[in-house]
Image 1 (cartoon, rainbow, N blue to C red):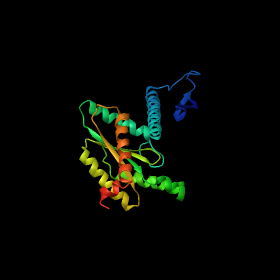
Image 2: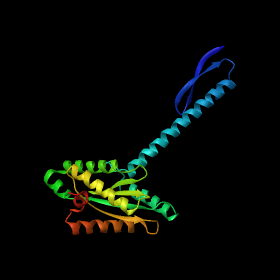
Image 3: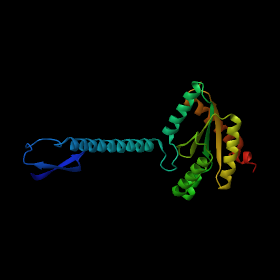
Image 4: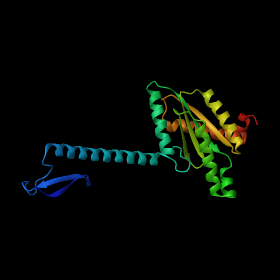
Length: 221
C-alpha cells in the first residue's frame, strides 16, 4: 500500500517519482521494478549526453574566441598562423601549393589621429568585410594586428594572387580605402615565418617603390 513518493534525480534534475510501499526497505536505492530501473537509467544517460553536448559546444566557443579577431570577425594572428601551418604541412606532403598575401592599409595612422579610433575601427571592419567577400570557403583570411591583414589562397598560382589584388584594389578604391600588398608562394619547403617574411618584404618594397600607389595602378586608376 503506497505511503509516499521518492524523488528520483539525474545530474541533480528531477526525472520522476518512485512509489514507496510499506513493504519496501528503508534506505533502498534505485527503482524497485525493472521497468522503473530502465526508465531511470535512460534518464541518467540522457542527462549525461546533454551535459557532454553542452561542454563540447562551450569548448568550441572558447576555441573560436581564442582564434578570432573580435573587431573584424576574421581569424586573429594565432588562428591565421594555425590555418597557414596546416596548409603548408599539406603542401609538404604533396598537397596543393598556394599563395599568402599580406595587406597593409595606407594612411591608417592619420585616420586614427585625425578622425579618432572609432572611425579607424570602422575602417578595419570594412576592410575585413571586403576581404571576406573576396575569399573562397577553402581559403583563410585574418587580421594579424593593427592595420595588417593576410589572405591564404589554397592551390592558387601567383597569377591568381595578382588578379586577386587587382580585384580587391578596385573594391577598396570604391569605398575610399587604399592598401599596399605583398605575396609569396608556399610549397611546404619553408616554414611559415620565412614565407610571411618574404611577403612582408615584398609589401614594403611595393610601398617604397610606388609611393603607396601600387593598388591604384593595379586597379587602373
